[in-house]
Amino acid sequence: MLLSGFWACTKPPVMKPSAPKPLAGAVRFTLLAPGATQVFLVGSFNGWAKEATPMTILNGALWSVTVPLKVGEYPFMYVIDGKQWITPPQAEDFVTDGFGQTNGVVIVR
Image 1: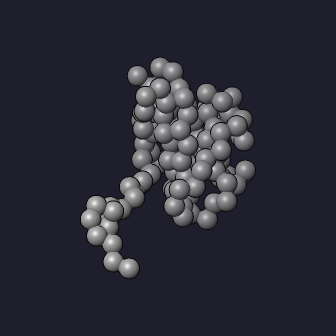
Image 2: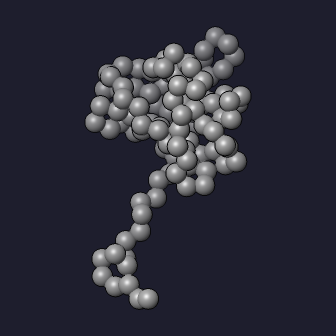
């Protein structure tokens, strides 16, 4: 079958990992985590609860979640497969947490 016209030329948008992206009243977080079976977003906005904010796999290794956040600064990390805490590779800023880890910081304006 030969497709022609608009639909034959369009491709789904390709998302890439990036710094947290502000949206209207929310922030989209993305993480490239090859081989992960679960990824969670943790931070001051969800009480650092490991399973409070699950991320969804989009394409093979890219995980994403959109979180409603008010104006402010929020430290955050990712948890892979329930045990590996990951410093965000792309964040607006970074802070040490007093436990030997470095947290990313997202700033909502």
